[in-house]
Amino acid sequence: MDELSADKLSAPSTENTGLLSWEYKLRATVALDEGNTRNAILYQTKSLGASKQQKYSQASRQCGDLEDLIRKVIKGDANKGQQPSTTPIDYDDLCKRCNELPNEWTVIQIAKEYTPLATTMVHEELLRESTPIWLTVFRCSDPCEGAPFEPILIPLDEPASRPGAKYPNYFEHITSIPAEVRNGIVSTNESAAASETLADRLEAVEQQISSAVQRTIEWLGPWANLFVGKFRSPKDQKLESEIYNAIEEFCVHNRISRSGQRLVSLVARRLDLLDEYQLFELCACEQLDLEDAKVDALYTLLVSLKRTKFREAKDERLNCYPVVLIVDELLDVMPWEMVHPTAEVCRFASLSTLSELYRAHAKRIRNGYFTLAAKKCFTIINPDKNLDKMSARLQMYYKEWYPDFELLIDQPPKESEFGDVLNTSDVLIYNGHGSGLQFMNGETMLQRDINCVTFLFGCDSVRLYSNGLFTEMTGTHMYYNAAHCPTVIGALWVLTDLFTDIYSMLLVGNWIPSTNPAYAKQNIASLDTVAFKAGKWQFNKQSSSAKLSVRKHSNLLRLMGDCRLFYQLPQRIRCALVCRGLPAINEACI
Image (spheres, rainbow, N blue to C red):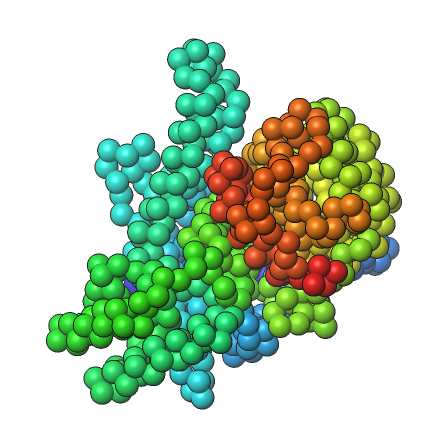
């Protein structure tokens, strides 16, 4: 690409086209080849959700005058002189957007690199195409306070192939998870069903998910520690400061750059999570580009720090502030939350979406969390009237645990009713097929400003789908977020109703206190699930609150982390539910 320059490429199209994303990815790759890291970060960031930023922009959410539009079409100048619906961002604006985000957040972008074959591939092929992945750190616990912080780009080689495995290609492996889960639950092949039991199929699904998570962690190596958020406790902060000081002294003595110091420090915050091979992998990485003698010296330092500073075993649960992931649509199916299961993790499709949602709710965000008092709650149960057992179980649960909740049972809401619920409720809980968007036209939803935290406990409720060769992937949660819904909880793939019911009760039941005084001191995690499946409401008598892995808490993301360790539920349920939107705290639970 010697003759190609990112700055000499033609101006990006202002049309709403999926090719816009790939044009920006190309610019990012060219910029990195030229050694222009700033432009590489800028263009890669702009590539994510490029066309949706126009579709879901504030201008697109406003109703235009129909007569004016008809007049322009008749004159043939509807598109003449049309300006982009969003103001193009430059690198300085990108840094400004990052700096205005809460100090408590760690913000990381995960995106696939450009592939020259992009315009010849369908989405399924793009998902499976083996390409390098770029990690970009926008906000973090900065070890170099006082020095200006800029986003850090870490280009990583594509995950290694595994010959002999069911899916040698890593990307094919993670992309196949939704289909494998669906096939494991419902087999359409009678001969296969005869030779393979349901339990065998589901166990194979569990193994596939575990293997995908393990491959991801192994591929990340030392960079997995970037997914650890800022420390919350003074004790951890003190230890972090000691680590930072030791590394700063080493870097100054060995004339290692400020960017190198930042990289080493960010990984070394939790040396106890890394083995010696991963420590050496960090010291010898291309990003640091150290001489052999300095590699050995740095490795010796890190091993010594691990031995002397991390003698005490740490709690399995991380006690950290939120990690905000900006995930490329081509990598969205991977349960990134499982890299550190107890981390507080939420997802966004692009930095633009994150920035807009933050700005929309900035006045209600305190200490890094969107705050609300979850008192007015609305629940929709079985609107399609074909999940009778689920309906009976959840009616029993809500009427016992939340007698004050407003329930809509076994009937779909009218569009006007659904709109009112979104506008006036503190919390909306949807228990049924899909995402609830079938009750309201997506374009109508874009005209609203939604303030309620939304739980979508339906199959594929926040999964991304392909709509064509040159269009970006779409998920129904994008309509919710575009309408400023602060937080959407939903599933990446198909779920099964009983396990989903249990998960929903664990999550909601511990985040919103019971409104029934009889259960003021009771924990929903001690519910007898065997009896619950049979339609009986009773609690285990010998459960100790100290043994419960999921306990009442106002922090929604922390509870989701606890639920990911609730091993009584299969992994296909625990890691399917993710947060699309802002970290949330329920002040009514404090």
